[in-house]
Length: 189
Image 1: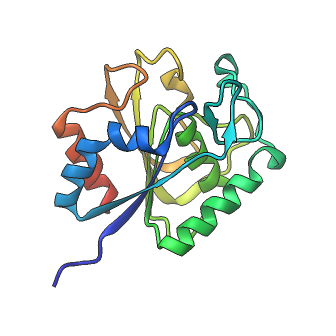
Image 2: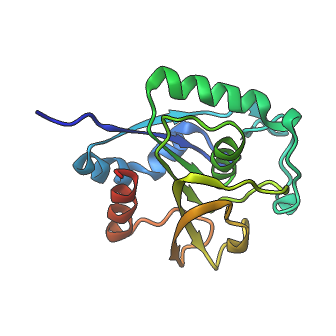
């Protein structure tokens, strides 16, 4: 009998769509099948000037990354939407890229859900605040010292167990097969 799949919910970056991220992660989904991963895609509901999508109800200014303060008014509706989606689709793992990584981190620290076993944050950052420890989760930060959009030093670090994979691709998701396998295996925990 085949074990139940691990359900992975993915969050795109600001200015992307769920379809664009699905295209970027095409090799991840292909290799992920070998690890019995099943992928789901959530899409931001707010628009930046010019129509690009953003996760929060405030325009994201790239120069402000690293200094954006946490506030319930900024995030609460998004966190409620995510919690509902997790419960409805029985999600086990969260993956987020850039602002989507910030959404994953913010959700884990402020809302959480007992179903979530782990998370992978690609080029993510935390909102500025006193960061409570999420002791029962381990996360994987996938970051680049060459990232000029989200400096690697801004990667979320409010977890007792954090693993890091470094790559040299800048503000991108790495596509080396050995890295993809390591990320898929981590997600299968």
